[in-house]
Amino acid sequence: MVLTRSERFAIFLERLAAAEPTDSAEAAYNLVSSTLIAVEDEFSGTKFDPAQWKTDGRLYPPQLDNRRAVAGYPEVVRYRSLGHHTLIGSNGSIQIITIRGATELMKAGTDGRHVWQI
Image 1 (cartoon, one colour):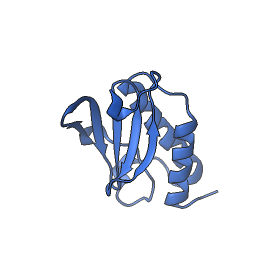
Image 2: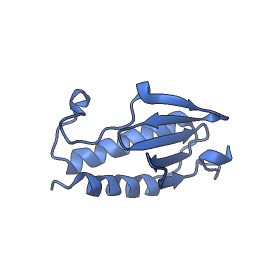
Image 3: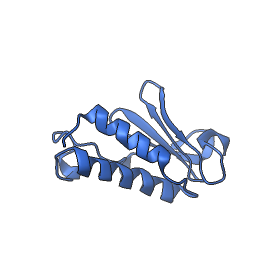
Image 4: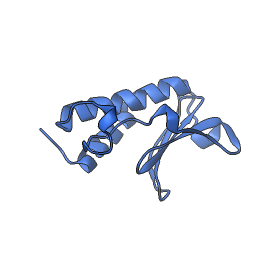
């Protein structure tokens, strides 16, 4: 079954929220990536091909070359995507916000703290 981008993104957020929390930035990044890839494999109808991200209509995980430091928060990194910022804390916390600043997801790390609490 092929779903719209917004429907797929909503499923991604639901699955990410339901997943077990992680305890490191690497584990959080891997969770975001693997969850999004799985949703897109299941519902996009488009083969995984990151070179085609501009034209194939599939959603792709944040790319490492879009990783940025967050001023004043040395334990947090930001990944810029087309319509979102994905913030990942060193404790495994995740926050996804729109470019306009609306929070789509806030997930604590295994220590119970969110991105801005570390």
